[in-house]
Image (cartoon, rainbow, N blue to C red; front, side, top):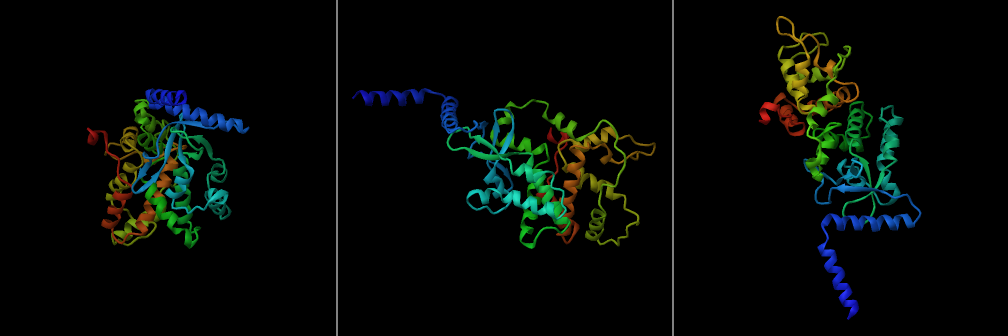
Length: 330
């Protein structure tokens, strides 16, 4: 009888606890078990749930925000999101490491992804339960960029071509900073973010100082525009004036929110209203310029797989939708 009363009392106390407190208790119990095994305590996730994954088109990847603010993507979910087949055990976990090592051996700059993929973050989900492995969310844009660069350099094996197609689909949904915003939205953490998130994005992308001009847009970008419009192309041929307007739409409006407007604001014009330097010269070395190169790689690939300008634009709007201007957002 006493045992029954104690059991009922325990259930009543558990029901009286808030969901947050119940989650904390479950996490503390799991960490205690982990520590008793002589292992270093894992990080704790505060936001995120299995039924609130990061969604990009039809792709879903479980995501979380840790106590220290790091946004992480679950390892196995990341593999599935990349369409990277995984097996069981350690061999399956190392699929991404193996892929990056193969590409590095073929001369592709993998941005340190061999080491980064080989050091997953061990963390405890908010609901408790088993430990999970994950990666900081900013790794995903880098992975997609490397895969697309390998595709353009024809370094992917024929059996790996599907990875490039998936990387192109994923890449439209984020930038290096955009992936953080997507994770925050999926986990509900956006309600707690600083209000100046947009200004921080612009600060990441747009430089205060003008960068020297270097060739940035590949010849393939212009070759494909001419091909899709049925125009004869030569490397030193004149370029129609409409190309500037098209590039603003195809490229700059799709990099990150507000970037095109901010670049225009910082770019002076001459007496005839022409820009005095290229917009890309105002992109930051750390984020803006790399993001531009990644975007161009994806755009050129979409162009190559399109048979007309209209078909390309339909695919571009689907895979790399333009960000609304502040005016359009109301």
